Length: 252
Ligand code: ADP
Image 1 (cartoon, helix red, strand yellow):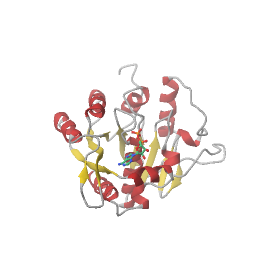
Image 2 (cartoon, protein in one colour; image 1 turned 45 degrees about the horizontal axis):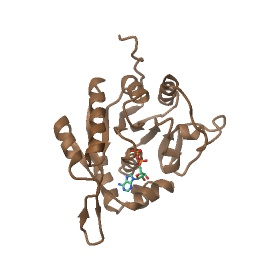
Image 3 (spheres, protein in one colour; image 1 turned 45 degrees about the vertical axis):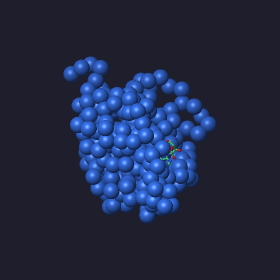
Image 4 (cartoon, protein in one colour; image 1 turned 180 degrees about the horizontal axis):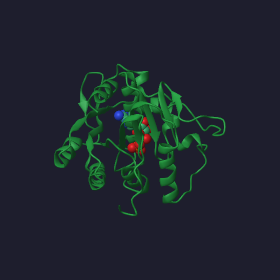
């Protein structure tokens, strides 16, 4: 075995371990991870969500939670039926985590290995953007079922999403598919306006020979819900974007 390679962790209670990844920040990766987890739960599956973004955790805010006393709080924390773990439970939002790569990798591994996730159909991992230490360690050490790559339709996001596809290929983690977020805005009259370009997700799926899992429209309520502690899929299950998430939950 390559001495650089961390040993594989074993998670016997978890049936599917899925990483949600993106090349670039700001494409909606954390939003997709949270809403996909919620949609899986709403379609009857037992679900955990692990926030592997140590420097910029967003799971607590998106689920209406904050930092807790780790001495008295058992992890994972359950909210809306989903088991959650995040660095944001351990530090306050104003506190910066200033760690070097190996320590970050260690924290991410301990979230997986030392927390009793119990029996789960799905454990979704919200990876930090890019192809750095945390992504690499996890891809090599966690028994990942596969990765979902989130991109927006434009070329700038695609350039980096391609690097993500390549990284998972190199560490032999299957890509379950590409999700295109912020594909278009639909007005009250049903007119769809593409804001950030057209067709990038499908193009990346085609060139990478992986499935295209679908488009998620732009909806200002997505951001509002994210900032106010309840994923849109739960708050507005009848919205077009929520329906797209519920469909996505049936394909992963
Ligand atoms: P990332 O994890 O890729 O950095 P986030 O999930 O934090 O991105 O999303 C970035 C911002 O875009 C957030 O404010 C989020 O609420 C918003 N957002 C994500 N997806 C959508 C969408 N489909 N429609 C509207 N806003 C969105």
